[in-house]
Image (tube, rainbow, N blue to C red; front, side, top):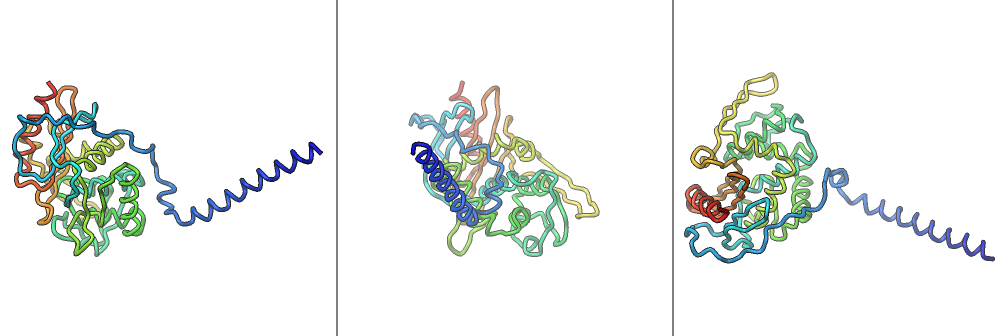
Length: 303
């Protein structure tokens, strides 16, 4: 009787395991294959520390929201409305880049569609039918905030633009970006349901990207990139719109943005001594000077 009881118990356990596998497979059919194959190292474990509130000597800025943080320690150096949901313009492309790099290598090739080539306004002037590598398209995204390049990546990574946007929002959820929504891969204003984020969420996203894929910092700090003509594409001559690269020692990128609704936006990355400061400005009237002032303030605070 004892053997029969043990045998029955084993059968019950096996039946439970088989049913669990079956139902999980049924659920898995509803999950994007790109999510199933996603090269994820793990849930983000880095977040800025609690602000100390001591900003009495900080510069007065026009930006609606800001966050400057030392990325190694997580020390918050300056904040203003850091959890306020705002339109962020082309800073959306930071997530676009992350999603592509989680699925494609830098030498992966993408074919330009007519739809992507027609995307306005800031663009590489891609021609439908051209073939460019991911690294070449990333140069366009970081130097001139090319919307046509972002659309090429969104279409070519999964083969489905809407699926790509879903992956962007799924990644935001995974990273703990609780006040973020992506409506498209460019950051351009839509008629409704626009993208939004916060200075806090964008700091988390950018820090994750540069730690996971440090090669993007090398691309973003390029002042000038020339892509010679090949059998696959025309030549491209691009100069960076991040003028802090040439006017503020230590700045190594990272990304600018502008739409009428969002105003001037910026994520800046600067390294001095053993410190790395990441700054986010949203809705600024003068992002260059305000970023310079807040970088000075931040590095002085770290001394």
